[in-house]
Image (cartoon, rainbow, N blue to C red; front, side, top):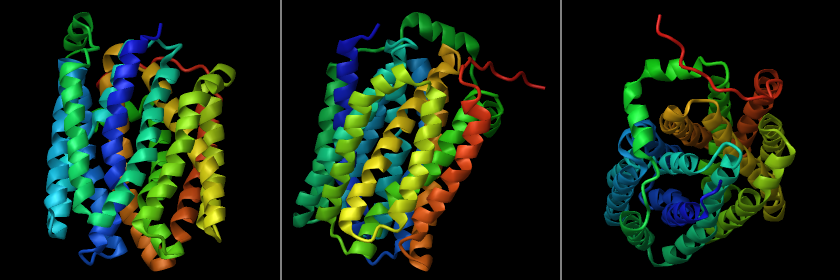
Length: 402
């Protein structure tokens, strides 16, 4: 059964969180460029947030398994507030890096929100519930970039301070409105498992499992390609079409609107008609073709057209893969495994912007798209062999030591 009240609560909280995030995300390259940063340095700046999140996300996921979703959400949002304030006060590249690192270390709240959804849904409705997270993400990207672009006319500091104010409102909402989703019975069950903290051996063990391991590997390589598109898009628009921050904000808002339509309306119908492995394969192939089109888009109009299937494929995959991952492990591992999934995605956001910036600077604006499409065409064959033919997902048990 779907608890609509709890789903509405977490939807609103994620939306407000992503509103603040979306408000400043497309401005980061322009902010850094105002201090003389090259595309490569901008790539490393974007990567610094993800590198910090790579450390923080799995830890927050494990802590939420033990101490509850609500207190970890509060810690995460508080870190976001501090990061945005430093960003607004930044007068050098060093402070920009510091602001993004602080926000990244505590920025694993999406994985905690996904664990919250898993707590309050059953397997039948989980994809639909997680689709609401994607819809909230998309809504944040409809309003956030537009608002950020408009505010940037008055300087890049103002959007950062507005984002900090939005995050403060969110923190108050979690503190006074959101109930805890992790029951005492579940906490006792988790504590009895004595799960170790996140370590490299723990990651290797999870990736070695026949079901969830393949899903997480798919998550990583799809994320690497999609993150290259996401994190380098503002620079791509600047160098290929000479677009400013306001126009980039409007374009990203358009992508967010498409994502909302997919994740808020279409996911339920798609998962009722097709298996999750089928949707994972189809969305990967569609994304590969679309990113190749993005690489060679000749005009802004062509770019806007090609962004539609990109948003469709990304919306489907990002929702369905989390649903599949949550179903492929025992209930006591959901928070930790989703944290590992978020950490792997963060790793792609470490690699992708740095690599994308280098590719764009040295080989031109088409290079990031060609690179991303090549990864996904290979990934399609991997999914066909290891996931599509195993359409009945089952629960993986931890592989015994020794």
